[in-house]
Length: 505
Image (tube, rainbow, N blue to C red):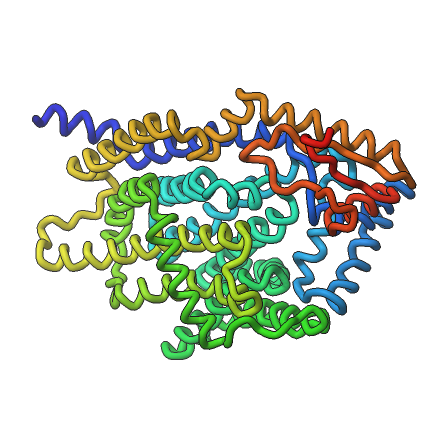
């Protein structure tokens, strides 16, 4: 028995676990990124990018493109929406430089996620809770796997492959993590570089405040929480450097929410603010328990528990009031639904639900970590002899992690046989192997040739035969006056474009 204990403690170490999860995460990205070469623009990509596309084709000047982008921001701010950061980024889809560049969308947002999640967690767990780098890396990789590989199909399409959704939600979410990580660095970093960090943190805060309303509201809640705790602890003298970046975040949000375009676009609210808040709690609970906490999520959370336990052993923080911490995480996540419910009366498109899923996973992880820390402190109080400061995992925890990983691997294998689109990477492999992705790209390339050769003409296109699960978002309609058809016609300077159904060909 001692031999097996020695063996498992040698295999399951914080370093080995971190390396394994890192290798697995990056290998799992290969099919996810590869299939992006078959991705093409659709819907808002055309309506948002038209002016920059035409400016580039007319002048091949980056200055001209940026001028059109800023002009679009001004128009949207006064006539449509106040989210100035999102408006600017949305005008620059990769297809304005050429449709073959559109696949960069996935690379951009996954790179942003892959850097921002560890950046935030290394600051939070490393600086505040003195966690070792291997535990931080393991937890970061597990969160990234949950975010990228375990989204629901429509969410992953809109947040990873469709530029207008990905840049407005996934990318802004990443900027928010960078902003929060920089706040932690300013608060607990050295004095020498504090001033230098305030500038990028302020820029990030301003951009996040001007991003989509869900992320802006989320950032405001967290900023308000920070202000509350600094105030009641009377430590503004120690954290006064946070005033500037947090102030810029608030300023960005105020400018966004108060934009004239919001009032032009606004309709009668679908719900009262009070009702929208309470319905948000319902949808968070409903989606969280029925659709987001799946068996892969449960087992990846279970793998994190020993890591959080070891982190808690090395800090004096007592993790008080775990119920309040859990409630706070629930409230922050629920608030993501409130803007959509207030304005539209529903929880919005897949991208909005997907963004809330990202916040949900992050809050779930931190809530479990906090609760684990509270349990560890209670356990140490009753069993002081069992309390050690070693980074090594106990044999029991090693068996725990090994068992969870074995079950996770086995269950994943038997799941993807009947459900090939269950995980993002297997969905990508499936769409590549069955020819859906390549066929989709061929059909779209044929269409683009018609568009580019049909300037000023009435163009008729065939309905798509291939609609890969991972890449397909939306298609044109038989109605020439549909907004998507009009967007494509304006983008390529056509007189009109009409979709012909296959049964009419």
